[in-house]
Length: 139
Image 1 (cartoon, rainbow, N blue to C red):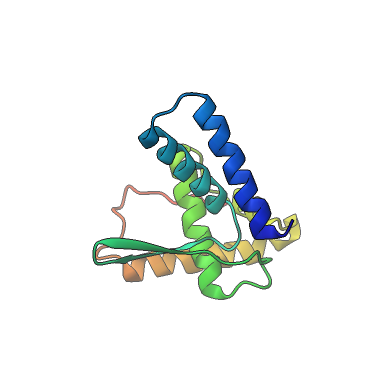
Image 2 (image 1 turned 45 degrees about the vertical axis):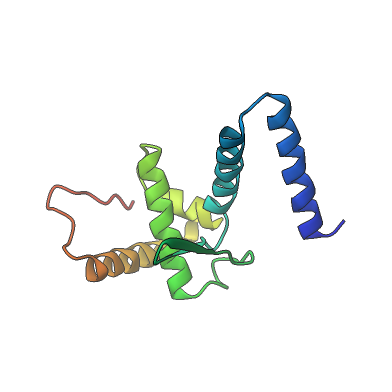
């Protein structure tokens, strides 16, 4: 089986498990959406969410290494990593981002540059910068 066929087969396997558990149609769709979101949340580079009138488009990218990503892809991945860490009530650190990018410890400077670029992008595109009590943790 090829990549897309394997993905479809896995999805149908999850569907059968959920159906056998007696989930309603709404719960069924919700769980499949959640599984897809989890898969997208940890891929590299991160998906690109674009909001349009009455819809949201999600652009998925093929797997890339840190060195293969362009600046924007690194910023988007860093931002989404920070958001996921916040939701999980964890600190976003240089170490956690290096782990996400699967980089060795000697790449700390590259990760620090990515964090700085992300902060600059967020502050220049936001209507107002984060309030003074808001902390970004980058070790």
